[in-house]
Image (cartoon, rainbow, N blue to C red; front, side, top):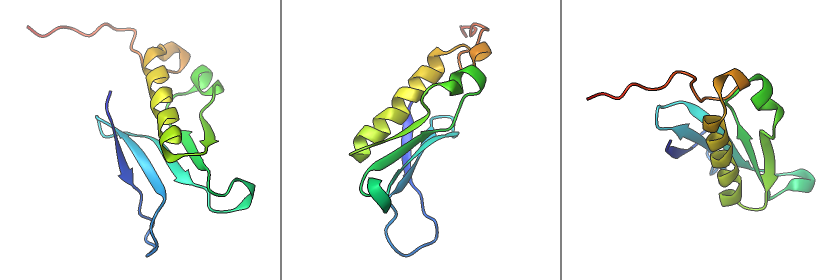
Length: 101
């Protein structure tokens, strides 16, 4: 259940303050980015991308004062996703994995 953070490049020449969380299976699971304007300027926005129906009724995004705290929220949402059964919109399978001998 590892996460790798990749800097997002949008083609601009200025430094990007946006990152994508990628699961060990290669699926994009979330994003964080620094808010550069308005009343939240300087805070970090986080967004979790997976799940459906009941699972997505929970908190899937927010903002924090630091990049690390925003990244931690994506990680916590990913953990909740894996603990939630698929029938409730999460990623936990109802079919037990077979052990390979």
